[in-house]
Image (cartoon, rainbow over all chains, first blue to last red; front, top):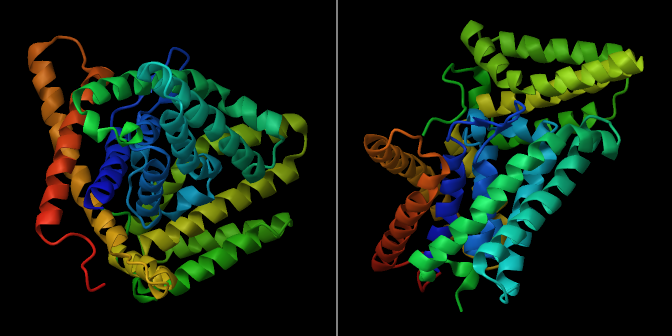
Length: 182
Length: 203
């Protein structure tokens, strides 16, 4: 009980700290932050339920006014902004990512966690993000998709890093990778 | 940790947080039903007047929070200029800016402790069902405490890296950083258990 609560809180804090890492500019001027890497890791390390709870806890703290989103953003305003779909998609992304890592046991963990991060952290997340943006800006789904595709290469990179990190963590602290604990 | 509550004290700081949040929900919902351009202009002017009322420092802080919307404003403005539907674009943008500005206004005038009290109140049905909300309250406190601790440890790690390598640490530092954090989590959960755990037997 105590350990689960602390791990959930820890990953919420980790997502916050990763948002403070300075943005990296990709070749064509798109800034990427490490914050969604934290969301992917919450899923791959904590598993579906705890991962989603951890992201929900993080969003609750953002909503009550802590500036924890990358760039020092926070407060209720971010939930009225066009990118709200992505925030709603975060817990779902962590859940989907964690679910895949929990259930797909046949392949090396690097591959499983990487693929899970792509499906949860990109496919599922962008689904929510694009629908949200299309509603908030009153644009078609196709137009909203065009607005966000520039961020996909950065997220592919983060999914690959999440895969490698998860495998390395499983080697160094097998008991802490709760998604694979028996 | 510094929250986004404005240090400039306003009369609204003393209003009940729950009422402000309920009013915000109502106002935001209302914004999405208004399609009239003039009405939206009047609303935004009113919202900006609310920002200006407590003085210049408050206004500047508030506008800085709104600045994050510029990429969206730019894209939507360009789209509707090219499309020729300027009026429709203006309604979309005015509504967007007003909604975000109102939400930020509530955040700026509500103390963190008042917000946490609202969260506690919202959890009342859970307690009525016999579920303990203590783990949630402890978890909130833990995140607020652990974030600056993790940040300090991360800085120390990257300093150590920089002392040894001319290259930047980048993502390579995330593994040792996560390991430190996981070990911390183990110690904290041991400490919590040693102090009687999260949910006592009488609960």
